[in-house]
Length: 530
Image (cartoon, rainbow, N blue to C red):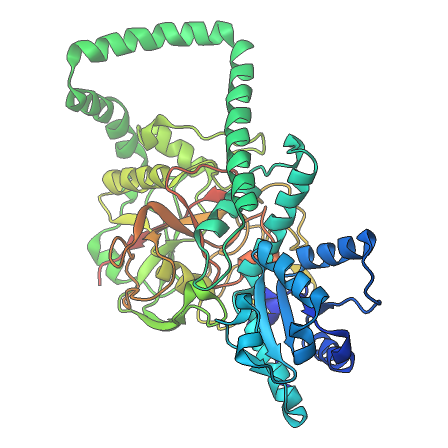
């Protein structure tokens, strides 16, 4: 039997469920197939009881089909003539399940059910090649299995919602709703479409979430009537003044000379590096271009690596990326202290993201969208006069892996010698599924960078593409070329609210550039002189 690659084990931590539909006359073959699938890490779903036309039996079959990720239909002359097997096939097709037809005994082409005719068959009609055929089937079942399992999960949730009279308590809420919408948008080629019921469920979940947020905002508004009244009065005075001036340029200049210039003069300019000093940096050396509360940067070497994972459709094809020049990456995710310094220095559009009462200071900044992250790096570039920016997706994977080829920067296991190495839903840390950890709470990778996986998802510069076909080979950001969607941006690294599989080095996220969430932050980069 073929071995399973380590990255495949990571992707399939819980077993994929496979329903076996067969004729009772092929029972011996079905038993052998069940054992073969179990040995290859799958959970077969199979009904061995006699077939009677009573309701409880069919409900049990419906439940098994509903929970299956893939339906394996055992083709034989008896199976295509079996009323029960064809009924199972029809019900599975109504759920848009993925089919994997296999040939136990040869069947005339005209007798093959319509739902299976256009699919590729795997032949088991030669007993001597059974194990080879089983390996081929296992490989096919693992294709896009992550996406297929979410198809099963969201389909079951939608059916439960329908069966309970569209109960609002069963609707999705963020971040699961955000994950579901991203899953829907990134359907792999050839994968079954979500059912109309699932699409309705996601649409109603988004509508209800928007309505709930509106109600919550209104509720908060009433108890702050006195404060709002004073605020509105002040805003009215300011807006009246701005309206009278009618020149954004003067407003920006006023802010520069009264807020930003004094701040930069006292806290930044004395610490900005000279070009000569930049050229003396050694690899992994750190620097900071402010008195306090700005990113500490680590010098990252130039180099090449193989980007992507052949088991993940969204990161195919694997390709070599060569980063020809060294650059610098922030040692930690950007903190609330760093962000608040930007606001104090007249930048970041004055926006103060809510910290969810988890604290500010060394906590990673959250509730910031891609545009907010751009506002920060733009401000930092202006006050330092240096090319600060966001990382490209390729730079992020290169810096995260730090020369390793394992699933995580520290190895192939989620923990290292029993020690939690990150914050996620199942990582074993004190903050799992509760909140982000203070930056630097876990060991650094080999480049000296902390929290490159887990804690908060990180915005990158790249626009969204369905896969890596045509991606730049020099590590630069991939923008609109090759049908890039720049209304959304790529995120990397997983988060405190995500399952461990999302920390895997090749996993990509995609969100609207307007999305703010408690599990999204960012990290800065800086171009260095040669």
